[in-house]
Length: 356
Image (tube, rainbow, N blue to C red; front, top):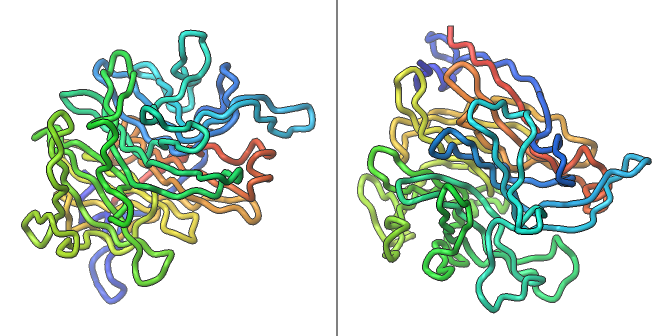
């Protein structure tokens, strides 16, 4: 089994063996092989549903085609989408996107009643499953009067719930925000299968504007009215955000938190891309609040000139202790991202971990 001691690199002066060696390779672009006119999206968090199907959730999803000159031509945009793979399928197999009654790829997360859909959007951030259904952590966005898709304000994060058979999501508590504006922004969610308790990683700006100090939050069960969000605070839970204990010194705006059982050993795993890098990092702990091991670099992305990387995710359904599958996304300028079909896809990397 992959232990904390094996994952954490040994200090330079230590005589202990160094941490594990990794070897990674890019394998495919997740979702690019499809017959439903999807030509780009990001996020790509996933969860295994009852029965073995795997659900992926995506952010802004573009429909259209790639023209004869190799340029992406966007016809329509969905602010969210979902897709499934059957039990036993490989991550690079063709996805089946969820559709509406007319057979068109549908928006996954609804907005609130009365919202102007041209102004407000709900972007999926992470997905988990519990005994009460499938839960998506979403980010509420206000685009305001601007026509620039990069000009928006994050209003907070909330939860949406769906039956795993229908995958028709509705907003819990009529869209009440789990992490409202100016709180630590929720970036990942996992439900402990042993207890049914949801855990949320929330990150806030660190000493530098690009750093993210990450905390652990614990909402009440999604099928009950929300009480105050509690934060892990040196061994106790507190509703006071100012008392929260930092569990990770530098996370990201998008992360994955997964409880895995590899070779019979239960672990909590976080995967993310630190700001200003294109490295997919992994850290491991025995409990969701840590302590987490030092980071191990699973994969170094190869971004196009001038592009930036984000959205590092562990794809748990396709991973085990010796072979980890991760995804990451890279974008350029708005014009480049719209045009170039190699950008704005979750890139799949397979990582072999040698702990000998």
